Picture: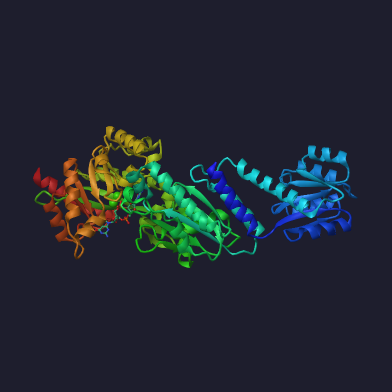
Length: 578
Ligand code: C2E
Ligand code: CA
Ligand code: CA
């Protein structure tokens, strides 16, 4: 109930402080229309009709912004009663509340029966009575719209996404010339907070963040919703103090619960929105802007600007070109070797398949650009299946030519992990190329495990039962707890590159790296270090007990034909020790 109240509050603000509602006054007598004008013009914008046909015309013209119709029942050409019947039977118009004006007592009953909201009898009552009845009808009608919307956010009492969008559109129609901002507010590392402080406490944080936002945005006549989990949206008149909004919404925890930690927010703003683009897209822009300050400790606010617009258009082009790229085989697979470094001579033990896009007009595009994009819209599944197929065919070709061929690891996106057919797809690709599960290694990013971990763990366990070896990629970035890792079904830990960077940067130290290698030891799984670029790094890692190394020191990712020199070398090595 509390939720409903706060919602009504913001909704009242929206009405009283911004513009006037539009009323249609239908009466065939000039004197009556003028009387109504005098009574109503301070509070409402007015349009007039002199007969039933004009009522329908005007209603159709203004249907999206019309708040109420005052309808005289006796009019020439088409009577008000007939007009009311047509209004009620038209699904686009039946939504507009109608107050009937009449001197005829019997007609009142009839008009109420066919859907009028209320009636006012002639001769007219006092102006304030008329105003009160109109106001009440409008409020009742609009509140009913809100309350009938079952999809409001239970937790915060704010609008939910759907209602918010439709209200924002309504808002625009009432205030066509008002400059507006679309704002997205996210809580940084909310996931982490949830783990640390518990769901109940974080629910309370969400409520308080919502309330803080509403206190500033609502006062200025804007509207607020919780879009999902820890993301809020606000649509408000341009020119608010963004810092103030963030400050009001950045609730503090009580001291003893958090040692002074605050919910740390980030904000994305699409200022002065272009109202010709869809409302959802305006908030996509704001979200993009918010993402630019994700993880930053110095910047809390991102603004959608021309650089972001260019980036967005670039992304859109990549998405648009995807189908053709698959068809025309513009994607190709590069291979980067992994070496075992604990033996006297580093030995090739496997490779990683990394996709590249040779785009006809944009040149070589890095997977660092398009993979995250395709993960967002699900295209990654199609791309991955393609890459896996290409890789398997390549392994097959090598097997036919070399005595000794290493397994190759493929990247399995966290999106792929939700596909119930994943296992069948992988087995199908192997069967098609006459390979077995020991020929493909699977790299699954750590962050895949931390979300929805139960389902992912089941899938991975099943894959391992079938004989696949699974490497946990980007280890150290997904915030898994040690406790959780010890229960994970994995065959190798692949350290994220940032640990190598951190350890060997000037002023860096290798502590973190040593700890992670110790963790892997404790779990009895081998460690793979990637991004190893120098001999010094390789030697240090060897001393720390790291098992496998991948990086520019040995080789960049290279096309299949170039990779063959590593296979040839390895075959020679194998022959020599036979
Ligand atoms: P990742 O799986 O962590 O792959 C390692 C990245 O590090 C590769 O970037 C590789 O080229 C780069 N790298 C390797 N050694 C060094 C080094 O010594 N120094 C530096 N600076 N970089 C090194 P790449 O190929 O651009 O791939 C970026 C990311 O894109 C990959 O990160 C992976 O997450 C994703 N990706 C690549 N191919 C695929 C694919 O086929 N499917 C999926 N789902 N994701 C892929
Ligand atoms: Ca990888
Ligand atoms: Ca990685």
